[in-house]
Length: 224
Image (cartoon, rainbow, N blue to C red):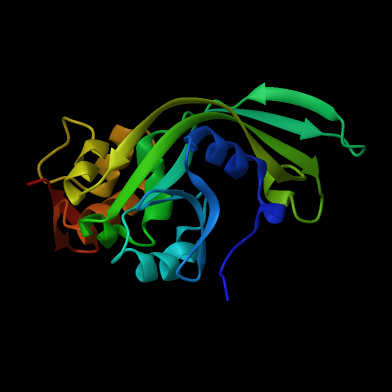
């Protein structure tokens, strides 16, 4: 049995990134040891993962020991919010004030930060410009003003950051933090909520990229 989502269920952002990343000679949606892999480039397996890293764990556990794997994850450096009306026509379009940064990927990387120590694993965070298309749904969309996200569309790629070892995670930590620093310090320096700073701290600690010591109810972090 082959484990796959299948191209019929593929979302636009995933499909567009796969096409953007594809090179001549790549095999697309190729079965490998019981799993379908987005792109196979020689011995390298490339997986486009827009969300839900935890859903990849079984595939990675099975394939990493025999194949190098690059996980490509998009973060919206620029996001346009497109709202549809009840007939599916575009009602409004505005630019979100939030600008994504590579550290945002830690919200997903918490699923397996220790894999950064595996010699076959690389995470590539791609900074994209995207449209987030929302449709009205009063029941499910109460958190977003009565709308739910229908799909995300790729408009362009602004750059990328590669994380191939625990040490690479230290690039997410802004300079000038206290020594040691807390996740409150990190949140302020990143300009992000405390929740994300805690996720970054968890990835730093579990991967071994930072030394963490408990002080009361929180950790204090030092970079080697």
